Image 1 (cartoon, rainbow, N blue to C red):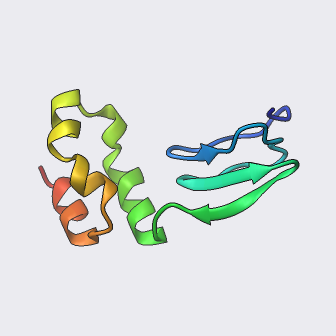
Image 2 (spheres, rainbow, N blue to C red):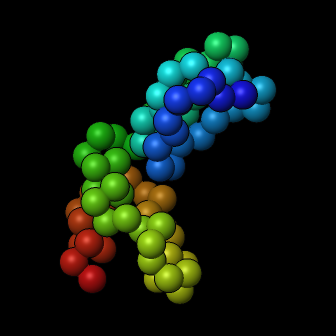
Amino acid sequence: MFMPGVRVENGAIIGTNSLITKNVGPYEIWGGNPARLIRKRFSDEIIDCLQEIQWWNWDIKKITENIDILLGKDLEKLRQLSEI
């Protein structure tokens, strides 16, 4: 359940039966009632890079070809994707 006005950013994960009362940042994992931040999925640097490259706007072929890099923790390889 989401309270009015709450914003959930890209890549966030929300646990089942959670009550979201606060804004959820990009690539954060929240759960509980009321929900709390459990952890971030990636480092702040990787999150910033993922936000910058906006992979969700890519065609499915490009996403599929680069899925290991997108889900990995190698910042340099991720930065290289932004140049493609």
